[in-house]
Figure 1 (spheres, rainbow, N blue to C red):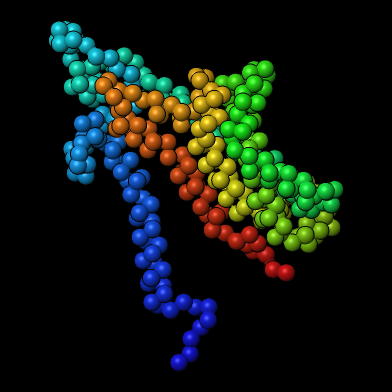
Figure 2 (cartoon, one colour):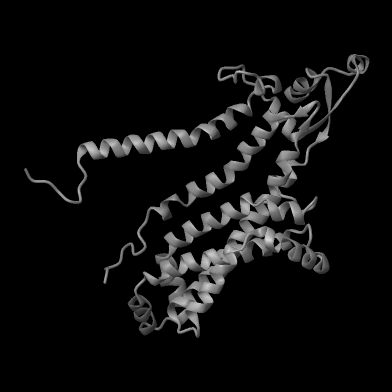
Length: 312
């Protein structure tokens, strides 16, 4: 009986598929639980045993985007009828809406800082990676190791020096300060990943472009960048995930103006305890930008590094 050394059998494919599906389901269970908790009422969110089937409610999302205050029954009776479903939900808890919450501002700060630092990391990282890949840089290996070593240092080791430096420079609690900090952390990863992708692009393509009259920058822009789209997309996702989820520096260096969503979500306190539906609603919304960003770049992630090119 003939068989292939490289081609897996049907049984091996079935086992591999079962394991992948099982792992995916186990991984998605916590995300699914967070998602459905955002549509529970506070009593349902802390019920024991946990409720899988419940009457859905938007109370968590209403509490996430509003601040509320409790009133006496006499004050409640003196109020006019509620306007809108949000006010009606809040009044069912003997409270009234005092104003909007700060979640929208913190979420926008995350978008500005996360995507701003990602763009800057990719821009600088691509230029540095191209230089290391194409030019004879003195002490190239030592410099590459030094760049990578900055990623090995835990944030807490440099938290105090950065805090003192930012306080002297006036960068504490600013968007610019956080973008520069996250860029400094991410650029080492960007350089290492992108250099590996650019190394795989044959130099002959650039040489042919230079012979045709292109400048070095034109050859980089029109030849290298399209070929490195896969590496740029995957590196951008890693950089965004770090900047989007970073917590330690955000807690230490921001308090109001530039505070991002990660340190704000745990502070969503309801009357009488932690408002788990509001926390779950905030976590669900917090996941969406990274998910959308990954889906948008999906086509680049699936393309080969030398698409449309003749391999050496």
